[in-house]
Length: 211
Image (tube, rainbow, N blue to C red; front, side, top):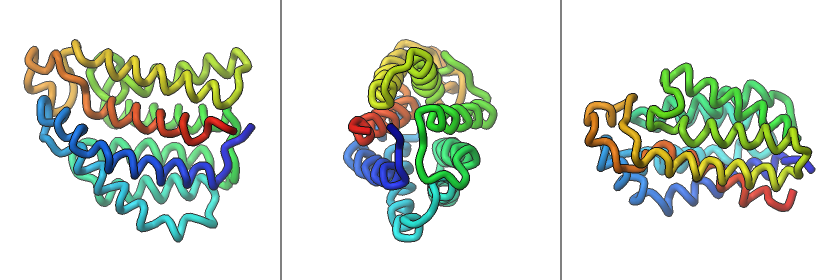
């Protein structure tokens, strides 16, 4: 049970479609506590990634991730661009030369990405950011691997943990980013970055469920 290069390309393609479908939803979430541009920025970034797809088709997974990361860095504005580019660039460093990923490879890649986001954004669990979806998802993956579950089951558990983390941002008071300027008024709103992170991992679980 492995994730192939073609699986990775299909995941990225599907995520670009999901972002386009949820562009307005993500923007509405961001309008409540941010700059009202998260949906538009993420959609624009992944449309640019789609234009790079032909040149990525014969590359290894690490190169694909790095290409995605560099493209996002140059096309996505706001906080989301540098943070999402960090996820993919760090994951790319962990998967250099690989044509397929085991569950442990995926855990290592995601962990590198999450740690990169923590360092760049200086955010921790409970700060009402994408970290609130990513860290529970990573922990669920690790727990699933320790329990010897299948790849598809581990990915599903990861996506569910990300969803719970995303929903858990609603009552939180933001401590990082533009939302933190609102203070107590940021409570009662779901974090847009946690939402797009959940969608990223939900898409992986759906695309790779038959692996």
